Image (cartoon, rainbow, N blue to C red; front, side):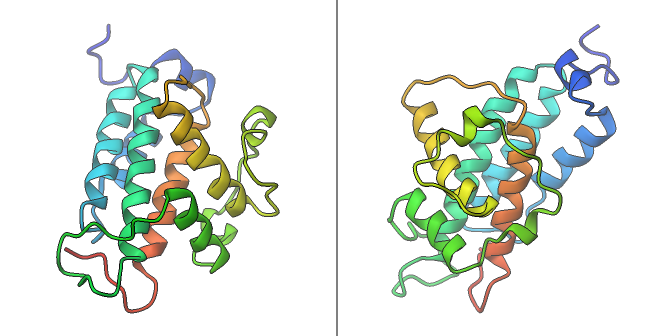
Length: 186
């Protein structure tokens, strides 16, 4: 029965994800944690989608892409133009998502240490990287913008890796707000 709150989509069971883990992750994704200027909204949406994905596994796709948009927004605010204040809602840096993500990795703001245990990605995903990554952070900085662009240009994806990748994107956004004197607080 689909309305049973203890039921999980069979794909989650195949991946070894429990209802408790799903609910805990959804709550964690949804927390604002002072990630402002619009970025927190996208992670809140990702968390809500994850709660619904326990019944409908196909929702991990939009969940992941909401997290991508949340990270992009956090990067734009982190690298916003000096003329913009950090208390106003602003456009932020208008450079490409790929360049902003790469910059955060090159400046070691986003590094492998923030992820904890790293689950290897399938070769099919790694082969989508535009550049040859040396670190996992570099892999994400190349892969995630590529996945985003392909998806929003009509290529459909449904992969279990969207679940751990969504968690990693939230960790990236969280580390951005903790850097230097910049604040993403609204």
